Length: 293
Image 1 (tube, helix red, strand yellow):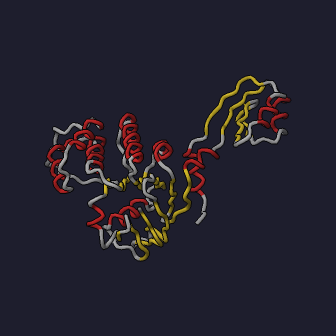
Image 2 (cartoon, one colour):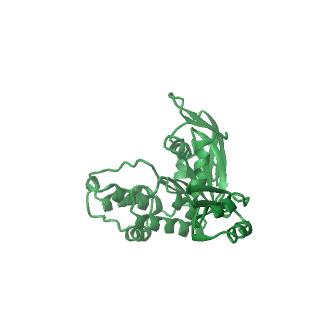
Image 3 (tube, rainbow, N blue to C red):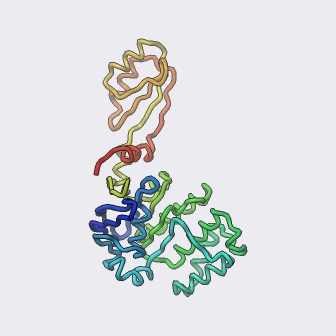
């Protein structure tokens, strides 16, 4: 559905994207993560056909993103990271204008999305908050019921309630076989919606990970308070991963079999035991700090 091969685009400051290779299958939600300036937006702009790559190709539905962009845009939902509106318009006026541009004749889905995101369409766009403008952009991206979505930081500026509503919308669309490339800084959003995630830094694609594999391999962390120094010694010699947080308080990290941990703790005097799950965010941090090109 989306295919990127050896894609390179270098700007005068020597920043850009370098030899990107990845593909996204039909019906897949692909997360795209990286620090600011990593190359996420440049990748999306190449997929939209807004810029010419220096080398390599990108295709959506088998169509060349540069030479056949107009055909691709007919079945594409796009949300840019920095949105520009006709600010003299009211929200409803702008939506109807965009519906006409997109040749959307049935406006029921548009009005359903307006209700879903609690978008106030009466006011002038110029006076809208960042969050309200983000909702407006989401309605525009989704109202044509496209086959493919390219979303750049789609929940930026949304409150937690609307972030959750956006996640539910993505899950609804995924269940209908829609395809997504979605850049985001919100790790919970990525964990809940995506099948795979690509991690980009300094223009290089550092890794592509399966979210389900990451979930199954995540470590469980336990904060254990012990009664005395002898208990701490038992833990330190027990062959399990741990670190001392404070006197008589240790953090245990377990992945997979918990038998050894419980065997060690059964020989200790445990004062308290608190479980903490490792978040997806913690696992991604290692890629931001390592050179694995």
